[in-house]
Length: 241
Image: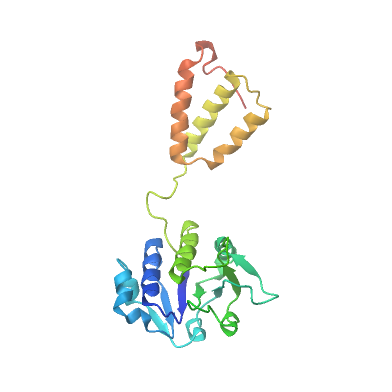
């Protein structure tokens, strides 16, 4: 799936450069500009540190409509609700909406409006769904490149388009490790007096699905230490199902 970020008539060169940098850090590389030459100004390059490849490959269009010819889903960003019967979604819901339609989508476009006035009603009319970033106060509004970063981050962390860098993605524990951990925890809970029908016992068992590999390893180490402190006749003698 291709995710394109489209800036409509950006006026501030630094915003284009900062947007390119935001996309680079989140693993995206498709930046489009509509009816603007701001990206050609030296100031854009000054801000786009480490993302010259994205700046070099910016696609420029005269109109938003021409930029959207290949788009299967067009997501328009707006700070205000301007269409009474339209559905508006917070930025956090966008990854879920894309995932629901993933099998039908090849090209997704996220459209950002002008710094001062956003998208026109006509431009919003070209969008399929509308989205905004929930804020505690209505003013000041988010900077253009800040908005781009938020959407790129939301998509990246749900593994849509961008890639989560190594070291930031929680590794799942192996089935063997979880089985060993379940057995150890069950035995210890019973040994210290928790009945297998108790709410605490059930809740702890449920939480195994949320454990990452490092968490599971840490808990196994703790279980091993606790086993050493238990009386010899209680170690390994509790068969719990």
